Amino acid sequence: MAEKKAFILRINPDVLKEIETWAGDEFRSTNGQIEYLLQQALLARKKYKSKKKDS
Image 1: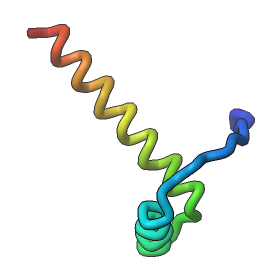
Image 2 (image 1 turned 30 degrees about the vertical axis):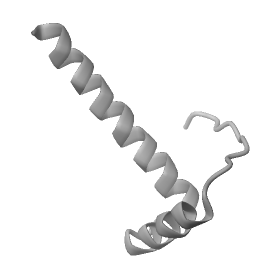
Image 3 (image 1 turned 135 degrees about the vertical axis):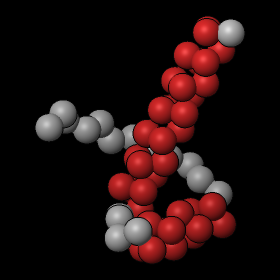
Image 4 (image 1 turned 90 degrees about the vertical axis):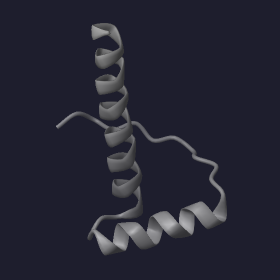
């Protein structure tokens, strides 16, 4: 497994609370949920970029 890099994240408290709730609903840690959401956003971006190139 690749080593993970730690960094500080400044986030709106209301957004953090929503992510914490969502993480609990999906049996993930808050950190795991944020990482999952970022991965999904990157996948969606890649798909969007590849569709844009095909047009």
